[in-house]
Figure 1 (cartoon, rainbow, N blue to C red):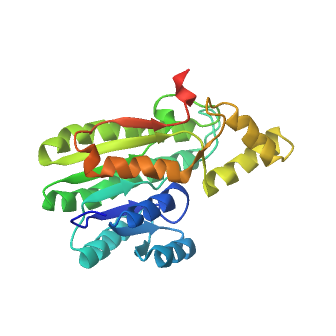
Figure 2 (cartoon, rainbow, N blue to C red):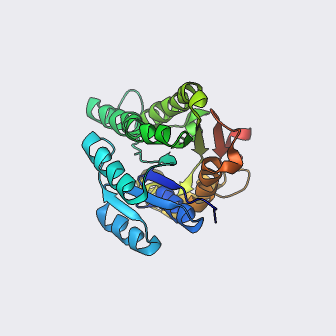
Length: 254
């Protein structure tokens, strides 16, 4: 527990890595406010952890403004933002549609920018704070059939560095977490689609093949990413900013 209770605002917090972050920060004694488009899971998690949930999309600035305002009304301000919300679609540069490209840019890049524009002014009012962005191992490597995702997540790496330089003198640290394959509802759905194409619908076989790519011999779990996100948000990382930190089971080591 902290001597002074801090407040974190998390996007995409209803399931997966976001939900693991909600649980981690709440367990560590922080005030937690989170938003997500998934209202049912969000409400259930808020009840479980006794935290504040607001339904909304990071693509909608008015949704973000309302969620941030609710957090500040309840907790008096913000000390940290975890920009976690994002989507994945399978595509190459040659087959991605204009609509899907727009969707991925609007969600993964612009949604993150909207989140930071809505929250960083409140960190400045506190005299500083921490931003943690959920990027990807695709800031470092390319992957097949992942053009739009790699494009947008790579952009988050540059956003991290630019913001760290601009906001460091103002007392705000900005870091990104770059995870490999993590078992979440999103990847469960995605890998079932892959398995239908390449493994006769056998998702278990597809997961086994994916795990074999990693030196640790397995994929990651959401709580393992949340641990790193929490560390970067905390005072234990007080001299760390502008970094892109891998939690990828050694995938990019080779």
